[in-house]
View (tube, rainbow, N blue to C red):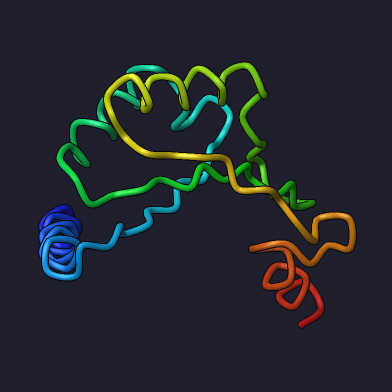
Length: 114
């Protein structure tokens, strides 16, 4: 699996170099799972060099799923670590959660109906 991730990152770097465009990496922040300052530094190390932009995405709460979004303060520290390492990033605004139509929510709702 990790070799596939490495291959995808290498291809993305090549694309960024060739087109002179940023490649967007979406990163869903999960409370206590992947949102520590150390994990931000590791992500920055993996994405080091030009060509990547990170969308930090808060997890959309889904009934029946035992994961939750990172607290705002922890997400802010994660963002600061990436920026300090020279990684372009921003928070993507969550949409659709109020209607249970955000990423992942519709899929789960369909599974529970079946």
